[in-house]
Image (cartoon, rainbow, N blue to C red; front, side, top):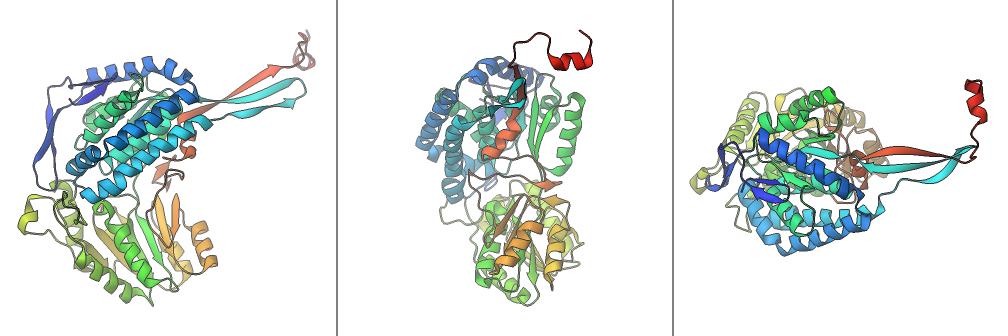
Length: 489
């Protein structure tokens, strides 16, 4: 079954099919029938019909469903891990230890947060009235998620929305929809009412476009490229919908001259290669003090050479494939062009048993100038571009010399230098002496062309709720003094 609409798994109505391919070996994991206009209308109507009752459910009732959902997902953790690994080409160790536990923790977090969604206490701000603030659900949310973290992004999109009382129609990437469908199925098994979660598997150009402009959708949430994010903004403008965008990134990894070099080298390898570099927050631009520059390059290149590429089902595999042959070609093309202006260490498409998959070796691009393609544009692969700096001012300037602002890290033993870096680097997250850890209690979201709004944490409730001012007259007097200042009554 290819769609989840109104509490049931159903087939798409277009008759058009697409294969979900395991990028580690090119085999077909599943064949799905794509959604069309009729499915969009059915899903949005189901969400619209479910909204009144779900939005009026008590915080305790919503929390109870999410608590049971977390328990059921824990029971089926291995099923989720295997499916996520196969559809997205992730090493099974990553899905078992990161993707699935992180999603379960996110469900448990929002089970608790659902019971702490407050307005503002009653108070008097004029002599004759009492005011209060209500925090209410927005309505029907249309969410479009990316392919690089299918399961985790399903959670990031759905959980704060439904915990706040909204209903949702999610469109996952058509190449990685399987764990999103299973997520909705298990949530409904936990007691979530039909229509609260709907999942449509279809193309962005059709299903995505129709969702963005649907008159019965109240808010749009999108994770993906900055270029498509602009399209979402254009669509939202036609009906003045609320918008949440998590877009691209090109995270700086700044190594100051007093950094623990060994820690920075290991951090750069982990931060640049997580999810095969297919992560908007991955360490993509290493900005290294000139006194440590060559040692840093030597250390990272040495560890890159030890990274094990292999079958994703093997628990000893470190690095999985890129998501598709097409993306493999894109990454390889950017690296090949960089050979004309920078020092490329490693990289390339491996042979042997891995040729059936879309693998690419870890690649270090040294001496990348700040204006070069490899240093400025998203590669979205296991590629780290490196450039030197001489002064702290130059390091901060290079960090901010980008249209993106999603994440960054600063490596230093000096607390004052760390404080300056976290204050002056324009990014939604700045890590100190680490790169890429995320936790459910803290927000994720960017500055500048990396978008606006937050996933995860209670800050995400600001995206999925609206504030209503309620004012009560305290006097019981019909002919109030302030009326007479405006009219003679």
